[in-house]
Image 1 (cartoon, rainbow, N blue to C red):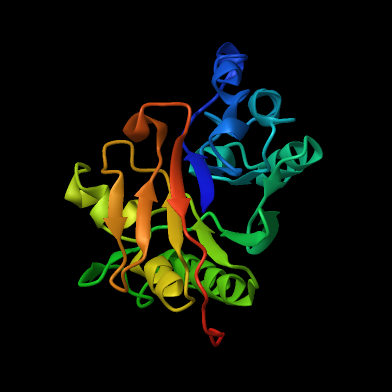
Image 2 (image 1 turned 60 degrees about the vertical axis):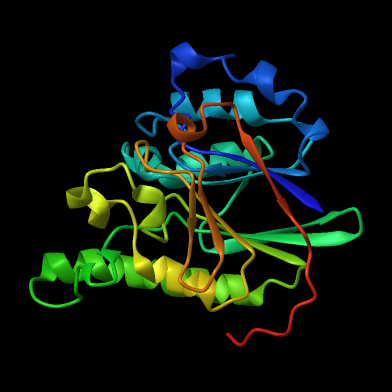
Length: 245
């Protein structure tokens, strides 16, 4: 059994220094890895990223993160990711990391994700240049997620995104903003690759539990939803057949 701790949308700033650290010191007693589902900062500044690094560095378990829309706001996502990586966090965007836990291997594939909406109520890659750019960004990210998940050789595959792959975990949010909270294309990538668990954030007023059309568990770990420093999920490694890319 692999224990996966996760949290997103912690939105740390200078006034939050030291706020989370006491609750994280003993995370190794409860989990084998800690996943951060984006929006780690408030405005994506390097000063805020330094606070994130101080809170999450040197923990007793590996820490894997993706960035969220807030982490992009200051137009320094590369610099933010580098600062966090230099502090020992594994920051993913279109790549994966694999860890061995008790003789089993867990692989985490990470992308920020993007919006676009869900089946029957989604944007189309058609029309104005701006609309095609919006939807095209999601298509590109979803295709990347699919390829990275399929490439993982592990007993457990986890998809880590900021945006949601399903509408289930958005219940509680105004339906009008669903297209800005996630995309069904992310869910299709997850279903196509034998993924065991999908973790995301972003939806502060949503619901924790959901499922893809293919039956993969989806969990919204935005901190306003889980109301704790992290929550823990258990995944039983399974014998899997090879998944075509």
